[in-house]
Image (cartoon, rainbow, N blue to C red; front, side, top):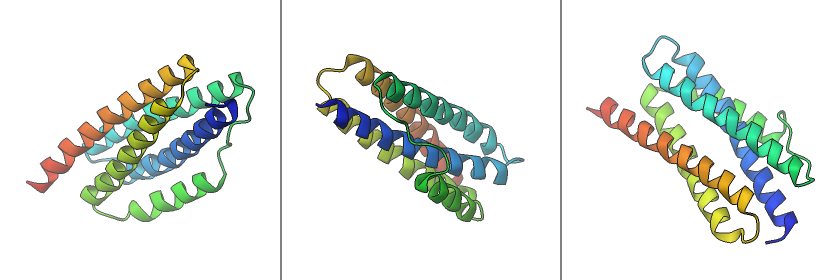
Length: 146
């Protein structure tokens, strides 16, 4: 894959992480006294790390990283604000859908990037984190449905 493809993929991931940060922030604030809030804040911290790591990798490759405040951040903030009015179950379902999309995106990129082991390792770590988040979210959703 070309350097341009890798930079485009990394910026796509960064924009998705920035949107997820906004959603998790809104949900953590809405659920602050709920036991779920601690788990949401833990996921938020990992998503923030992903954004930092993706930004650093884009810069290492000579690219310009997407900045917070762009369209995805605004959409994430709006989605987070709107969904913060939902039930905890609905919030978790939205978060799970976001995590599942991130897993698909990372898996596709890992499969396609051929000559950049450092980027692939970063994407593999991010995907592993997203899979862990998805497992936790599924467990919480199952618990709330009982």
